Image (cartoon, rainbow, N blue to C red; front, side):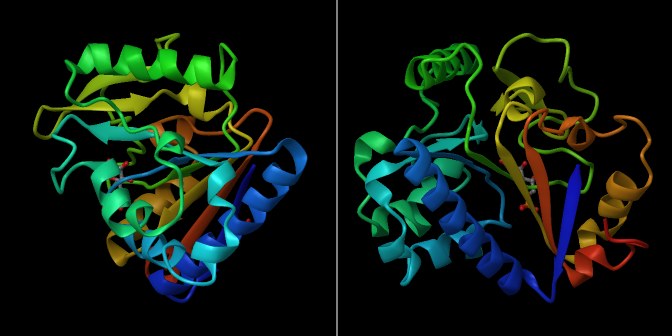
Length: 242
Ligand code: 6PG
């Protein structure tokens, strides 16, 4: 079930997302002593990461029991500006008291297939589950309807694996991505979509239910919920809000 919340602009989207993460993390930590979150890459979450690095979040989030993963990663060096974990480190993780051992970047120095396998095995060991259940998976959406690094036209569902090595069709760059199977096992998925350039695809994905035409439409957690936080420019073509 999709729940869509519309905000005036990307700043309000980011503030709402930060508040949601704080609330969700508190509940998870109260219930089971930890909060596991998979971050997304791209530009949209940068404002959110900045917010989480500042008061009140830098102080109110219980960083010692928060565990950070990535839903996808570009196979570029850890210190590249294109690397998603590098972006989160620069904007957030280097500015909060989170133990290094709570942060799980993709081992991009490995060959892509090996890095995907290593990440999958690490997840199974960390979660002590063959099919890990993330408390929260943060996702963005591209104008082509991709999410994480699940791109249109690439094999996204045939696999039983949890983490895949893929190539971005537009430029054949290698990436590591969670599969729909893993994402759909999360307790909660939160999409952040901002900007008028996302208006067409957001309408298409939310209102024209062309069955699984886009990878993003494969995301519907079986025991969890899907929340969309969009700003008005991105939501401008939406007829009805669910
Ligand atoms: C990535 C992301 C990707 C991103 C979308 C939207 O590694 O690029 O995980 O799925 O969320 O491409 O990107 P923007 O936020 O830059 O529009």
